[in-house]
Amino acid sequence: MRRKSRGARFSIAFKLIVIITILVLLSLGAITILVSVMVSEDLRLTAEDNNFTVNQRSAGEAEAGLFTLRANAMVLLETLNAVGAAAVLYRQASAFFFEWHQDVAAIALIAPGMPAEQVLTNARFFMSRELDASLADAVIERRRAEAGRALRGETLLLNCAPDFGAPVLALFFPWQGGGADQAVAIFFSLDQLGETFATGINSSYMINQEGDILVHGDTGLVQAGANVGNHGFIRAMRETRESSIQTLYTGEDGTRYFGAFTKLNIANAAVVTVIEYNKVFEGIAATTRRNGYLTLMVLFISSLFIWFFSRRISGPLRQMAEAAVKIKEGDFTVNIRVKKSRDEIGLLTESFAAMGQGLAERERLKDAFGRFTNRELAERAMNGDLVLGGETRHATIFFSDIRSFTAISEKLSPLEVVEFLNDYMTRMVSCVNNTGGVVDKFIGDAVMAVWGAPVSMGSPQADALNAVRAALAMRQALMEYNRDRGAGKPYIKIGCGLNTGDVVAGQIGSHERMEYTVIGDAVNLASRTEALNKPLGTDILITGNTWNLIKDAVLTEEMPPVRVKGKEKPIGLYAVVNLRSAPEAVQEEPYTLAQVRQMLGTEAPDLSAVDTGEEEKKYKIG
Image (cartoon, rainbow, N blue to C red; front, side, top):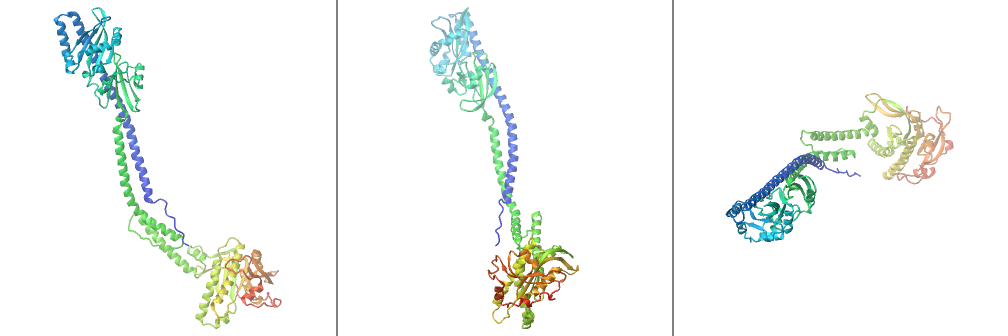
């Protein structure tokens, strides 16, 4: 039964695609990571520097604007204090100031214990924004606490947008006018600082000491009076002694920011500038995504190319793999379609096809040669392992002969004799080959075979037992042969003789013509043992040499011993009845020699009249 070949677990195309995928991912991935790391570091440094620069600029402009506003207001107050409240110059100076500072809504002079403040209002400011000018007085009334702090020497910056309903800040600061401690409140809009704190990639905003947002690109936060004093970054900023610093922090919403702050030298205010961490690296993320798309496209194109290219490789390799399985199983009739290609695969395919043809021719020659000799010998001969010479082997030698063959052949034509012998020999040789024996030669109707040379089953006992199995198989095959021949045909009987001993096995002849055989006294004794079957009325005889090796495995009956020239003691002879545990190829009976004779139609002789020492050697071997 032919075993189904096991297919490859992973195809060449799959392996190549995996390899290319790994290489592409490693190369592009390494480049992407390397560039990302290097560019990310440069971008981070640039973003921090830019953020810090924007913060410094915004803080400088805000601080300069506040200082300028305070200084101009103080100049106005000094002027008004000098000319007196009723003078014409008082009104002119106020009008001139508001003309040049249209973003100032009002200036209030606050003195300790005064029930009412002196308030200068910019009518144009309120009219342009549709606001009531009395709002300044109302805001001052609500901001009495802050005014008191200003009278005690503090400078405060307040968000008054919720009070005015418009983006308005108030700067409270102490002032000594006319030799008395007073406070000044300047109400002004954010128009002056709008461009400085415009929202962009970098977002700047200004806060006061309490964390109130004073100026922000999102005016809604200012209008709502938003406070960020509890934010971790703002608290850390207030706690540090540094006047300006840059850091990376996480906001209340979990977003990461680059944050920079600068404390102003007025009103304890500070300017904060932030930029989202992810926005800084948006370009890198976009580049990484593009590289990912490029990698997928390269992988797709590479996979298609590899898939079609690998078919030129996997096709011939698959054919060779299937052919190799057939060759392994002994079928050398392989047919490989050889493609005309000049690469290594084409050369390999051509070589493999030629090898298959060579093996088929070799097998054909071996089969042909094996018909004239043993298959193992044919294999050795084709490998050049057979040379003149011999070696001593312990083997079991077998002889068989057809009883009354001369009388049988006289009744047949020469062609019928040949056909008969071919049919008979085919059955007998099959029994030898099936048990690991080697047919040494044919001598007319006789067969000579050997177990243990040139190949052995592992031990002399195994070789001897296999030789007996072959003889018993011949008995069974011959019985079936006689039954199939039908009535009117002569009944064929054979005698088999076996002996075990040392022989010289090897190539005998010349370099031009040699023959593998075994020679020695053990061979002559096997031939003589075979000849004793006729007078002893047996079909299978073994010598004591063989019996001693396999006596526990066979059923035998002892026969009169045979005397051998040169031996002081006679050699024991035993008639083989059956195996003690008969295989399927051998019938379960017989159990006695009498049953054997009855089965074969052989009469029991008078053993007392048989002279086994008579010089009868049908074949002199060696």
